Amino acid sequence: MRAALAEAAAAAAHGDVPIGAVVVDATGAVVASAGNERELTGDPTAHAEVLALRRATAAAGSWRLDGHTLVVTLEPCTMCAGALVLARVERLVYAAEDPKAGAVGSLWDVVRDRRLNHRPEVVREVLADEAGALLRAFFAGHRPGAAGGSAKVVGGGVA
Ligand code: ZN
Image (cartoon, rainbow, N blue to C red; front, side):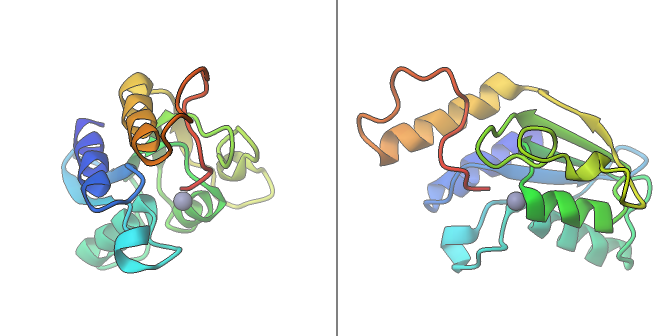
């Protein structure tokens, strides 16, 4: 999660919402990492998780990531939750909950939907405070006056 948080901080440097992801293989080695690049690339699908999955599958030479863990700083959205199911990721670890767009329990629960043929294990709220602080600082900087008063971790429904 530390590596994912570093990717998140790097994303903010180019104006993207600070969300980062890494993919770890069965031995514990980081095989891919990415930050959110939606603003950088103008691509609505350039979420950290999707980019990290693409890099991990390229490195693995296969679309299947059996035995791999995706670590991300924010609860995945519907697209990313769907992508990690499609990639057969074994385990998802995330930090902050996303009450506005989360698809791992907040609004939907895509990764544990019994109608799908693969359901990754989920570990939630790992270093959530740090991930939330990055997001709050980012939105405070972009929306002056909008940061105070809320206990909610995330604004924007952005990734
Ligand atoms: Zn996403």
